[in-house]
Length: 386
Image 1 (tube, helix red, strand yellow):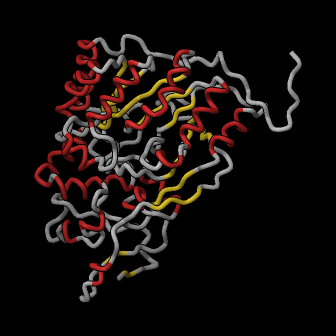
Image 2 (tube, one colour; image 1 turned 120 degrees about the vertical axis):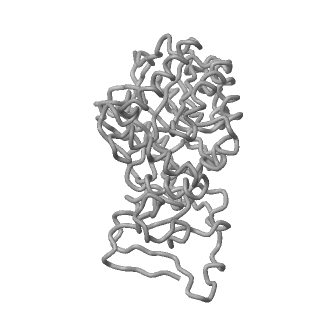
Image 3 (cartoon, helix red, strand yellow; image 1 turned 135 degrees about the vertical axis):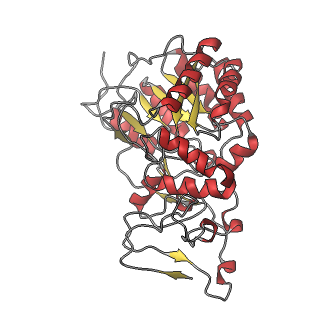
């Protein structure tokens, strides 16, 4: 069923058409998982994480034993972290703190830059990332405790910057709703990023917060093509559902942003103007975009997916990616990692700007307020008389 090598510190590399002649053809790579087992998932493989001392590879021993393996099913375990607010000092993003109610994401977006974080759990950034999920059921209580700390200074909390807070298991666990209830009581600003129409479930809370300039929501619309979306983001809401969610948010008075993200050259970059046009008609006033990012294991996972679904575009897509990343598959430099460099990246940025100007988007950027913040009362704390 499997082989292990204590000397294998990295998962087997992906072989693509641009690799040296004579290499093993991509479809036969042992890291690939048989189609029926990964049906409805984004990644094509489940190679070991980069920190593992052993790399396990499935192979057929002649007894067709791989046929007996069950499909990948979503499993949920507890994350026992004692803090819920994560801090960062990245100079090219607009927030310094965030919350991730879940680890892993069932949406299964093949390009997700958060996939490599699963390696820290001893799991694969591939199929494990979208099937072996961890939840933080006590996140609302932990958040209330952190907001009540004596030295806490309020600034906007971003949610959905790593994994989606409205992924399918949120319907059952409702952790995100609990977090919003805490933030509303404390008068604390929040910015949400999601690909799910489930966000509309919480319009009641978000609308009340928006009236006090405490909430805004960004929805990522990668493509308007439902077939491409289902292949690339298998368990995320359909493009039409996301546009409808933007409309409902806007009509409820909740500031809504459309994110054309990620922009993938020769795959969805031709849709930039149409996505912005559809979002503007839904009532959106702000827009942004992010160029495809391929850090660490995401590069090979995206290669596998591209070869399995769009093999005729493989060379063209990666040629353009490298043109925008200084000749590399990815460049993590601050300030350029989101937009890229070079003529192609400049053209994408200019097209985006012209379309936004034509549609009246980004006339002003909303900044949330911290004026309403009131520290939650800690357990056992005496109430003030005044």
